Figure 1 (tube, rainbow, N blue to C red):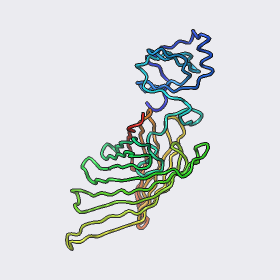
Figure 2: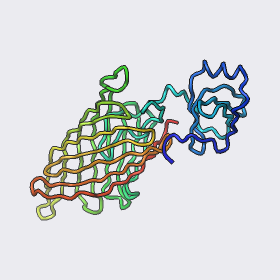
Figure 3: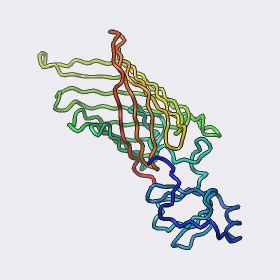
Figure 4: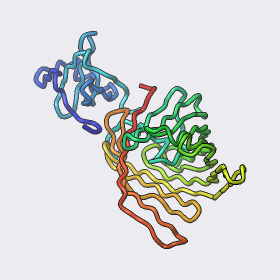
Length: 299
């Protein structure tokens, strides 16, 4: 299901007949990654293309002839990141962890939709290479939050592993009909170190809640500093270790987990989360977290 699956369910395989022209072409041409409609991937050198089918010379199976109607996408292998010496599809959801944002930018026209337990949803869309907007809510439409996020690349290293990104943004909304007049939001800024496949992010901001008090016809406002530490370390084409920890007021919330990659556009996050009240010295751990994310736009 996940990641690069080398398969040719309906593709024709010919490992016997290899004309000299094909062998010479395979030696000089760059490697391509061909994604099929069934989700499988073939990596090799493009040696023929007659409009109806494409010939890919692979290292393990020789020449594979692929009908054009089975091809979903094809691109240069050199344009894809390397994990453990293997070419992989990029992390389709690098701009966010379980919930916390990263500084990794989305390109104009890209976005994502995330479902948490299929009960809560959030979506984000890039208006430009630096500005994106989004919304978060649940099946019962409470809370309902909107956000604006700005990202920028502060440093790019030669190997791409030591990049530094900056993010800042505001998320605000209300509890809607569950508590009319209750508003909540957070303003934050943060730095991300690394790249889309392996990174660490540090965010800091202010978390605020404003509640209408019916007995005084006024409002009660509460603002607390909030910080988060997040990480993502990809160790294979199909998975990475990931974690997120928040500290706001007296509450420490978060935990470790994993992200699994399915093809080019989908990711599934699983984690075991906990919450601990530092003032009362009590908490709980072992809360399961599951979310599914689908990238939109791009290819």
